[in-house]
Image (cartoon, rainbow, N blue to C red; front, side, top):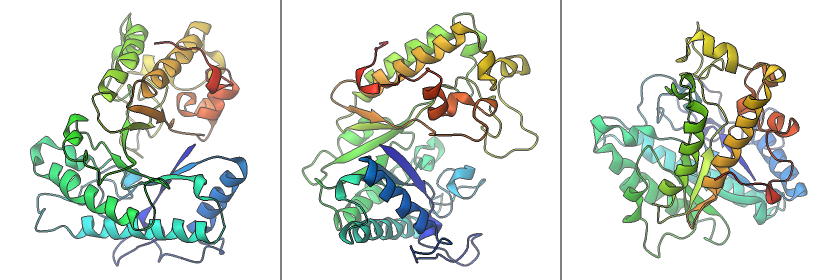
Length: 338
């Protein structure tokens, strides 16, 4: 299964935004929809599934470069709820995504089984800002219910999941809001990283503590009454990889000191065996948690492939780690760590 991030500008662009007018001709190689459809048809041929994830919201939902706009957050802000234009616009974009998927399926481009689900919005961390407590309701009581309903206009629960981001909130905050029979095949997407602003690796027992934390993650996942898919994780335990901290920053200034980055920033062929074994164990410990209990329903590693492979961050490259024996060749009959 693959999680495919898409930009809102595939479907919707307003004046003043730094994106070209949407090209809705999915037969044109100048349209992003051409490549999205082609990827889905290839997946259909191979018997794979896709989660279509809206990775960016108008106004930016988190201030990261991968939201389309780095810097200030205005998907919703302190002007909410009086100003909810970007939230409403995102719901309309969710509907356009669902319409596109439905059209392609009905036209026979790929089978319904190829679509696992649609993710309403990646990492709306603004809803978890403690300083703007009321913005939690923008996700939990406003955007998520309305987004769920527009996807269900096109897909029955047995056809596709509706995926909502945990939004930096606790799993328990979702339990009382989405437990009714109205919400079916509703899945929480949670991202689990142990690399950001983390200095465990600088301690003598750092690897052991990372492994322990990975195994304990399953306990928090199973606090959720809804199924939880881990939409992002990696085997990285530092911020040494170029452009990782805060997006494209020049000069790059990682959280970890140079002596640590000299060890962890790429050059996988030079890693000693105990380092490679840690990566094997760390990958297994994480996916053991992400598949644990009644709530852990699976995972997507971020990312499938990086530029430069071992020179640019092997801990983030699924295919490179798989080819080099860190990730088991057969994930369905693997050893377990936790």
